[in-house]
Length: 153
Image 1 (cartoon, helix red, strand yellow):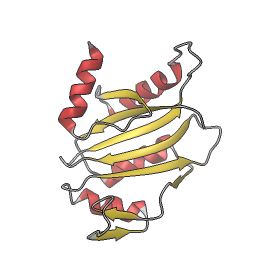
Image 2 (cartoon, rainbow, N blue to C red):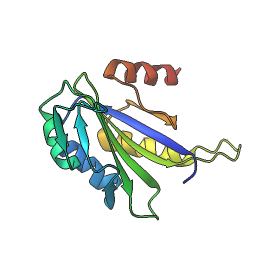
Image 3 (cartoon, rainbow, N blue to C red):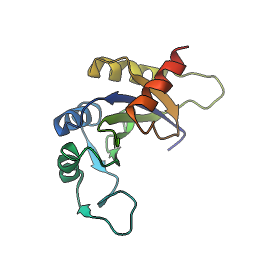
C-alpha cells in the first residue's frame, strides 16, 4: 500500500446504526483491523474488553465519555476506499473516515481524495469534512470545525 489520503467528516452522534450504515455504503466488503478492543483504549488495565467492533460500537453509543478508534480493511481490492475508520471523541461525537491512495508523483493530483470528500459530505449532508495525509483526525468537534474553517480560507 502506498501513501494514503484520509478523508474525514464529523457527526454530532454516536449512533451505531449511522456507523454501520456508513461502513456498508463505503466499505461493504470489510474486515476489522483489530481482534480486541480495550476501554479505555491503550491501557494495560482496561475496565472493559471487547472482541469485536459491533459490541464495542454498542457500548460506545451509550458511553460518550470514552474516546476510541476503530479501523476496518477493505477486502475488495477494486474498491477505491482502502480503509474505513470511526473515531469516537471524548466530547460524544464520531469522526468517520475513509483512506484512499494518494498520488505522490509530484503532480499534485488530488482528484481521488477530493471525489471521496464530496461523496462523504453528500452522504452525511454536511459541509464539515476535510482531507489529511497519513494523519489522525481532530480530537473533538470544536477542533475538527477549527480545521475545516482554516481550510476554507
